[in-house]
Image (cartoon, rainbow, N blue to C red; front, top):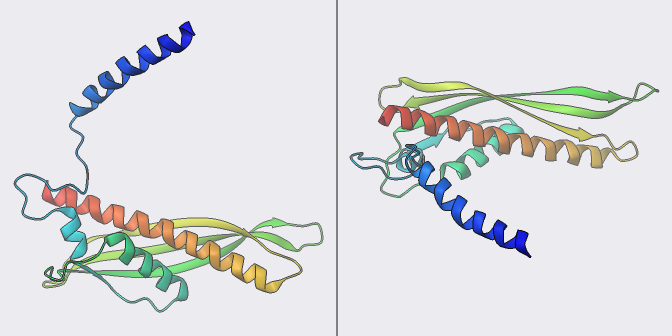
Length: 176
């Protein structure tokens, strides 16, 4: 019982001290409205239009990026175009004794460019790589296909988060 009371006392003293220290470190939320700025990062993200991608995995990536950018306001004009090129590669990961491949790595590479719509200037760009693995079901081709598609969706989710984060950091640097 004595240990529990000490633990409770430490928790009630240590947490406020840690919170006080982090408040003074200069940490600012990335998506918060900032004093003296006309546009928040969320408003900048809402002004991005994502170009269409013909690849089925690219369609999934585009949809995830649109979700991560947030819902655009009807009053927000489109000022940026995000162009993305997608490539995927399946790498054999585990080979059985009879030379059958039982597991693959699916590697998604998405190269992106953020372009100012009015001037055509490339503002930011880069490449994001996301890798996921999936098993081959020996007795069911459909199950293997579904596993591959699921791995592709997961890779697209991870790549979309990374792209939106990088663009958000670009707007944060640009505003600062």
